[in-house]
Length: 305
Image (cartoon, rainbow, N blue to C red):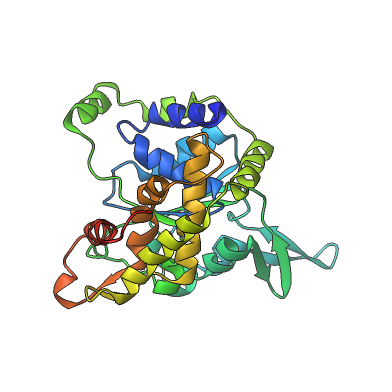
């Protein structure tokens, strides 16, 4: 792993205890120029993870608290009239930051949720016919509460597919939770994080990931996995071509974190559950299964090159 990125993961791990794999997958998402969805109950550390990453990466941070009355203009910004100068000017919204925490995204209405689509897909927003570029790198970390909770709106499949990875943080191990209770100083620890990288360093790392090699047998392996999801009688919907691209890019970023300029099947296996879990729709009797379990069982059926 490149040393500065190792330092980023280590710095975040000092605040988000016992979640090194989650942190590493989050950094993988950023390196692959994707966006991250964190799905779990409140109070599990999702916001702390996003704040810590922004600090360690040396990037501008912005938080958008999604609520039922949030409007699209509250995210993208709006055009305001200056009566003194008799002119209109654009007032940027909170989306104009490099790391965006879209907190409890499924508490907003679908119309407001869709305001993120263009920014996530194109790195820009359009307001009243004018397009504005967003700062680079641009990384959205969205948190989502379980759908069963009161006052939530399910994200549509089209927006779920925009997220590069989906992760669950789950409860910490008992000893880690005891360590957390013994200090109760996460805010101070986040503020004490010294930035390891700058924006140009992140952009340079993202460019290097693009040049990591994925040989033809590895691409065939990814296609075998993808087609297995499309043919499975357990799934009503398999992985899309965008999802297949995400698996390859995630494997490249994971290999880069491992200090290699080429991908191995182990890289695909490491990232596939996080890339695939939110893109799969279990069918009928299998709808109660954890999506991670569906992915793991599918991976076990596909021959490794």
